[in-house]
Length: 172
Image 1: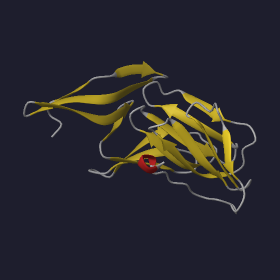
Image 2: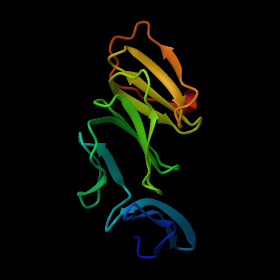
Image 3: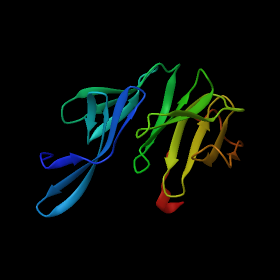
Image 4: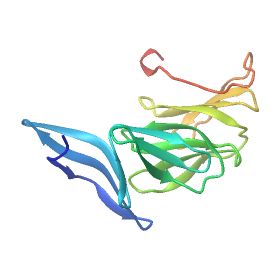
């Protein structure tokens, strides 16, 4: 299936090589597959990305192979992926922070650091470029732009220790 594919974007970073998109031709059509390479390891689509306390991994569903994406975390819990931006977002509940890593550069950034409790759920809304999160210890739901600016408290009333959040962008 991927024998006609070539790497399109590759950049050395932090002693690793990140390759993000495969350019593929099949029967006269051009398709793009989301894939990334971390050093010599890679995860080809479809991948299941998950947190495992001190690291974030990807499980290659066709082979059951595990690829380590981010390690040396304190306690990663909630996570979501912005596929078109090639960015993973997660909460670290020991450090009380929401972070992100761009898979192209490998750079990890803290985006929400102030007045944050235990974030057990977060969701990226890719159409309006917002991130929503459920703060368990402060019993509230908040939203901000993907870079952490324009933070807004959505509600605290009738919210008792929220743990998860899901979005339906088409319906608002």
